[in-house]
Amino acid sequence: MATFVQRKGPGGRKVWQALVRRKGYPQQTQTFDIKSEAQVWAAGIESEMGRGVFVSRAEAETTTLAEALVRYAVEVSNKKRSGPREAYTIRLWQESALGRRALASIRGKDIAQAVRDLAARGLKSNSIRIYLALLSHLFNTARTAWGMESLTNPVDLVKGQRPKLPGGRDRRLQGDELPRLLTAARTYGGEIGPLITWAIETAMRRGEIAAMRWEHLDRTPHAGGNEARILLIPETKTGTPRRVPLSTTALVVLDELPRRLDGKVWGMRPDSISQAFERVCKAAGIEGLTFHDLRHEATSRLFEKGLNPMQVAAITGHKTLQMLKRYTHLRAEDLVEMMG
Image 1 (cartoon, rainbow, N blue to C red):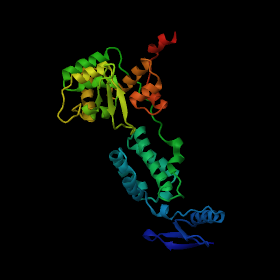
Image 2: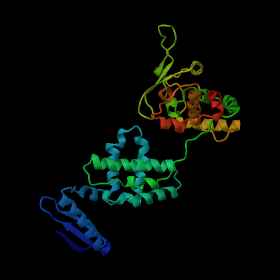
Image 3: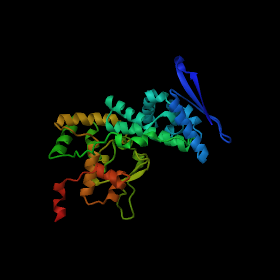
Image 4: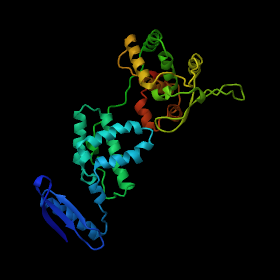
């Protein structure tokens, strides 16, 4: 039987404490602002015990989100390549109003309100998606690996209320933009000109390009005398290494580069590449183009050469066809001749 006791809570306000005792189960207790909430909670506990499906909520009801995030950072996030980036997201949730709440007390409506709060702060849809993904993974980890089987994942309850992601960018080089871009890059100087050509020839991500090392280049002659023309990318965004076949134009870019003493192919960091590219675009009078759009351009060109999705994915590192559809935008004008 459940018992209900009225007590003084924080600040002297009156609260109701519910206690559920049943043979074979640990005593369960919880405090509520009003008695009716305590009665509903106790009835649910007694029902689960009676049906033999009760799972203790004690740890989930005493562990705050902020405390759980500390454990998540140590046991999960620190083992990811994205761990340093996730540190900011973890701090955001710890410092939020939900950070002080027990895991078991967080409901779908709380997540919906958090989404509205993030949007009000000016965060874009994709950033909110990343914040929710981490929170969702934390709840799943707590339930499956930390022994809090009673937890439900409140993020799953607001799927219909999450911000919609914008469609994939379809910006490609148009008209004489490429020669204008390369001309402005030569005037700007440095590595940005060769970097632009390299990105279009390989469809590599900015971070992968910046991390390139000469030791990962395979130009060993085959039995027939031809070079291997392969670049190994040992660390990728998806965590799966891949080998990129290089075009003759890409090899020309490499052959014209000076060798650095540190073994790196390029001397620019990812953020420096983007900054230089932005300035070159401005000098060339080109608007709405980002360095990542060159990956879109390169991927589309691979399809236009007649490669099938599996072949393109092997080069670009995309995991699924859906991802390729998002990043690849074939122009109808280029497909007219293929239609017959």
